[in-house]
Image 1 (cartoon, protein in one colour):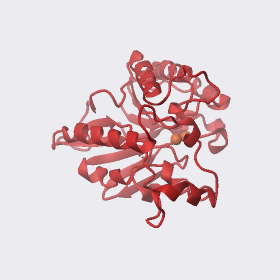
Image 2 (spheres, rainbow, N blue to C red; image 1 turned 90 degrees about the horizontal axis):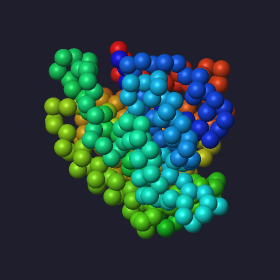
Image 3 (cartoon, rainbow, N blue to C red; image 1 turned 120 degrees about the vertical axis):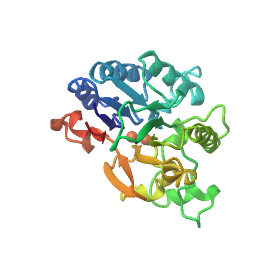
Image 4 (tube, rainbow, N blue to C red; image 1 turned 30 degrees about the horizontal axis):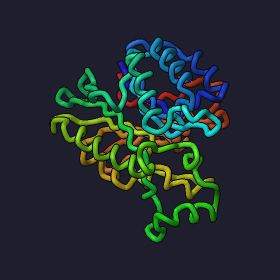
Length: 276
Ligand SMILES: [Fe+2]
Ligand SMILES: [Fe+2]
C-alpha cells in the first residue's frame, strides 16, 4: 500500500484525457490529485470515475484552472466559491476526500513504529505576496507586464462573493490554520496544496514574474509549524523534489501535452509519497 501523487492532469487536453484511461490498476494504493484537473466539472467526474477504479482512495485539492469560469458562459454559470462547492460536491459523490473533509489518518505507521501521519488536503489560493519587497501590491500587474503577460486568473478566476482573490486566500489560510492546529502534536503531517507554500520553491525562467499568482508568504513556515514530513504542490509544471529543514517538498505536475512524454504514460509520473 503506497501513497502516490500527481497534479495538473489538465484533462481538457485530449492527449492527457486519453492517457488517463490507459493507467494501470494500483489496487490498494491511495492517490493525491493536486489540482488543475480541468476547467470543466464533467472532466472532474470523468477523472474521479476512472481513478477510483484504479486506486483504493482518492484525495483531491482544487487548482486555479478548476475554478475558472469562462466569460462566454451564461451569467448563471457557477463562479468563485459556488464553483468550488460544486467540485467538492462532485468529489464527495465519488467518495473522494476534499479540503472540506476531516483530515485523513494514514492507516500504516511511517518510517518507524511510533510515527503516525495525517494527510491534510488544503485549498489556500494566493495573495500576490510572492513579489519583490520593492514592488507595491498596487503596482504588481505593471511590474509583471514589463516582462510578460499576467496570469489568466485575472479574467477567469472570479473570487465571488469575496471582493478579491487575496481576501479569499486569507480566509482559506485562517480556516486551515485552525484545522491544522487541532492535529495532535504526536502526529506528523502530509500537507497538500495546489500552490507551493514557499517562494524559494519557484523557478520559472520563461515567466519569471508569474510568482504573484503562485502562493502566499503566510505559509512560508507551515512545514515546520505543522510538522510536515512531506509538502505536495503542483501549479508550476516543473516537476522537482526539494528538501528544506528536513522536510521533503514535492512538485508533482504532469502538465500540458508538450511537458511530458506520452509514451511513458501517466503512471510513470506518479510520485511516491509513502512507499510500501
Ligand atoms: Fe496547471
Ligand atoms: Fe495551476
